[in-house]
Length: 554
Image 1 (cartoon, rainbow, N blue to C red):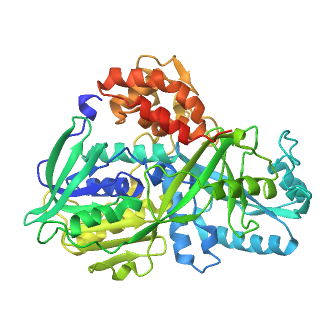
Image 2: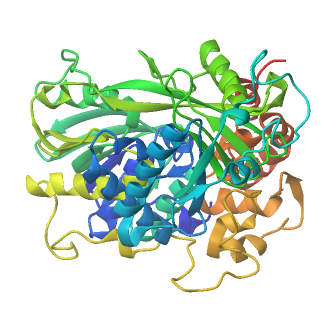
Image 3: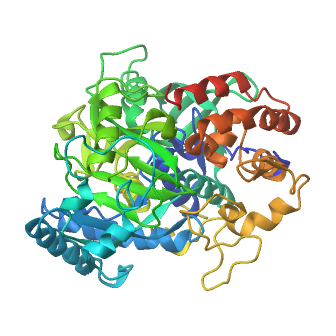
């Protein structure tokens, strides 16, 4: 990492310390830094290494919330969807969805809901919602029967293929994005605004003092334990927020370990399968609004492959690397056949990944005292002690508005620093394009190809306006596999905080998520380059073990 990009320390104490480098934490860091606060962010692993890089890759208003009457929530998300599309057009783009109807009644009901969804989007609409004939629908949903893909067994033995029951369909618009690189763009934007960001920096101690919050963390770059003081702390650790709450709130008054805090969140996991685009050759997303057991199923074109998901399985723990349960895999394989008409086997799966979603516990607004500043069924923002705010839940689409609400919660209680250099009112981050985004109205260069489809194979276009800088580094023409060049690895090590093979092949370049076996083959060459650039252990063996967890045994 170049000196200009290395983590720097603002004058102590920090005004705002953010713990957690996912969508929420990075959004808060950008918001606070642009407001002139002295900001630091500590992330135990890598940017978006938890839930935020394992999303469904969709920016959406939430069609299913319409039936529940959450119109305000949907409209807010639709507005934020449009905002994110404008902030990073090289990483977030409109995507059309097709929805089959198995009966004329269900088709009509779905159509009315989707028309309402478009109406709510108003001036933020991405396209018209239109009806599709059965012929048009089948052309967009090429399963084994409709598209002539060979191999496998019939979708449902002894029954008709699902396409034979479809009467018509609907086509509507939402958006998709590349979540890990959007997180990275947020990190770069926060750094450019003056924030001090540290990945591989695990918080080991947090206690309240008269001057603020004393934090200790293990810096994995040096192996040393470091210490700092912050006026405010934002707990943005996602599904793991209760661990930091326990550390901070049980020792905030008397020191030593106190009683367990009441949990704010519980975890639910979602499993996604990735198959070759040839196995399910779609260019539009396919949404099955209700499977045989009432769940939602989708297939999405993403980075040259097709993603099929997802499940929603409650669990009592929250491991860093959750694995799919047998019943989840059975559900996805079964519904791929029964709902999408494509017969898949374990050998078809190039990668399988699992993400954990934090779900706010019922009654959490009364837990642990304090006052709740903002709450919706999507997220919870809570000031739990002077200068200590927890933000959890939510989704990628509304990360920016959630960050605004976190800063508002701190401001309302007088926790934020004021004075010279600090904005007297919140900064509208919707007007600040992220690092790598082309200026509004600018045409992409041949190198950045800023408007290449997110659904197509990954390439240099994912760096946006930074693509020219990548090309100037050694090894720009040396391909390491899957389109990844030596120069891209060097750029990631020098300018994007990449320390380990996992950092590079899981999030800077999505090889692990697209084809885990190919990622393992690329890993030794990537490890050698990272070690050359950083002088640190790139943890090759750990990554090779991780690749095995992302594959299914034959």
